[in-house]
Image (cartoon, rainbow, N blue to C red; front, side, top):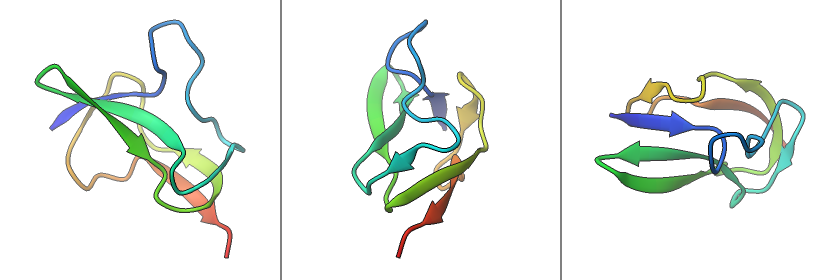
Length: 72
């Protein structure tokens, strides 16, 4: 369990929004667990079609954070 952040710092724009095209290694957010920040990558090439979690929301391992339309 950790806290999900959509932006690199408070007050800065989110890493991605709906409509953002991403590569597999594009950072889409950060998860903080016990003061350790871990960057989260998209994991696939595509376009963000939906954001499933809010900034500052608690998330669990394996929980979907975004929906991507994958580009073959």
